[in-house]
Length: 398
Image 1 (tube, one colour):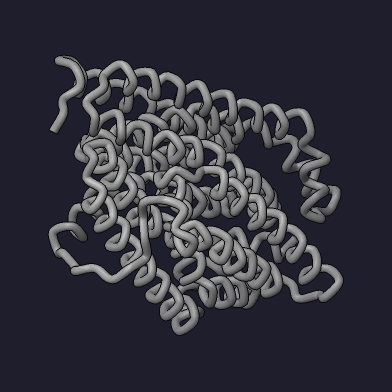
Image 2 (cartoon, one colour; image 1 turned 45 degrees about the horizontal axis):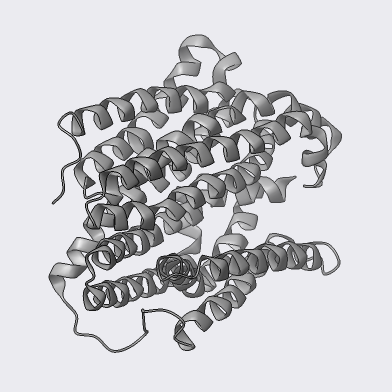
């Protein structure tokens, strides 16, 4: 179980990188979708190449930091004692594959916008299945521990990159990988459009970091180990509603670019239904089969029982979180970056850290696991208020 705990301590590093990747890829595809909606194909191509470059540079930076400054990174993450060396192994080997991870995520977002969501689905299935198989192979038969888990993730991302590249190499859509003239203004625009999503995705590492600290002080090692299992399930659920929001993003952007009010409202309603239903199904599975799910991670009986007892207390917040994620995507896809940034700062940096840190101090450890859902409810109130104010005179096109 210490291996799972170490990976959970290293998880904020991984999630911060994913947030930076989201900034470039979502910023780029948002601009691309709006320009496609206006019929500006060259403008869409320019946004694509600028965003790919940013993601590539993010991958290079992460590799340098993760492989060259592994020990300081792990200390900042709070890894100590037996967890420290295990966390170092995971961070080093995961960072070694960061370029493939960054570029793969970027190209998946653009491939979806370029009319080939089917290939994105195939890519994700290949990555997931290969990752699961290699995790088993490296961790159990080959006894490589957390190093093997990180390498498994890296190899699966490299293979996924090769799959998604076929769309662009074979020229199946409008977008091409080619030379371009760098434009500082477009780089800034990509960062601005992608900043709301980057801040939104910071919610997970900040939440994980705060929960790790609170659980360590409240329950000790068993709290960290239990949360490591829930974090794995959380990452799957987050992928469901981040996937839903990213899937709706090109529809939001193209409808906004074409100034089609009714389509935009229809897509918003449809996106919320998809998010709520998808997250609710995940929560139902977690609540009905907690023991079976915990056993998949090789946990001991004590950890399994402890995790199963607290599973529902944490997971109900996913349903509310899915609504907040879709509202954020709706904002940044319709040139309401200011509103999206304000919402995501409240959600990702303020409300989660305050609630997780201070609510248990007031109400005791009985509410520790509920803090995730509590802060998502408070954020939803803020989100709906911002949406109502921004549309009090109808949707504004810029």
